[in-house]
Image 1 (cartoon, rainbow, N blue to C red):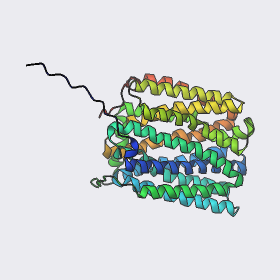
Image 2: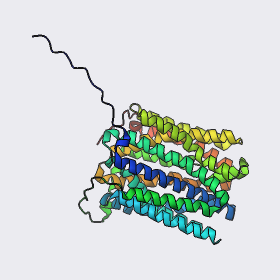
Image 3: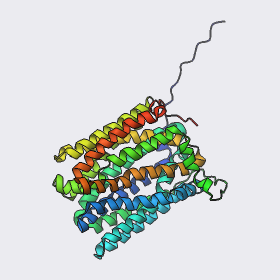
Image 4: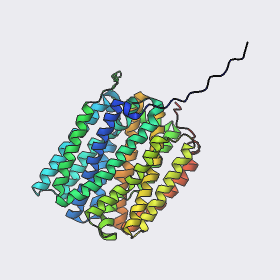
Length: 415
């Protein structure tokens, strides 16, 4: 008998992400909500600096958002694991819409104060304590596991596009007054909430768990016993905590680079330009090899770019440095989020994502507070330079502390 001929292997093309209806609804909602959030933060920061002229108060805006997220982290994770994540997100958008309308009324009535803006920051922190873990834990339910890294990169592309458009648009609209920005924000949050209410996925309510110390701390225990997950999310905490300069952008825009609100909007959007370009590439060509080394290299690039921004007195060079920092950060984000979600079982994703969201919040809101404090002591330039150097030191230290993470090759589930 003649030998059987081997059939040629057929490489199936992955289904386009646009074919996943509910993921696309989530994507559109996230873009609208992120744009509203970014515009809100531009207006809130500029209005606070107009009222007080204080770097310390700019830092307090970040601290007031971080503390509620820290205090509510365990409760938020439990709620996300027990309830429909899409509806939790829709409720978060509704509350932020109400915040935008409140700020609109305060600006129109000329009763916006330092204390009022800080109180609003606390309210936003409470909302985001639930929003961030629900947002992180939802995509694995909307796409198959093998599509998840590509979906997260695409989701990040949309988010970064909103981060580009939001601050730039917010800076230009602010010329008409803070109230105009808050009105647009409220409309965007309302749109995001409506889209999320239209989202459907297979949701089987899990068995009700009593709220005990054990169930609340389950996410913490899981992370502690997973060195790859612990190393990835703690790297973000310490590296971006030191390297974040976003809170000081109003000072750099006005006092170092001598540009107005339009310049602030462009500076705030610049990291997202690099991040957007990088995420588009990662959507088409996902990272499949040398994931650990790539992540650490990306963090080092972020630190170097932060250092250049701190030393620059040229507006175009500062924009370029922020663009590169955004590109480096995006590579790290996609690898880190894919690793955490793939290594975590679904029944634990809410609690693990809640802990992860505190790390992310710490690297942003707490990083803003750290930047404000060090700027008050060392000046804005000294603060950013110190942060850039600190980021490089952390990246080098984490390679030694988490060698298995540095040697991680593929982004596949290990559980």
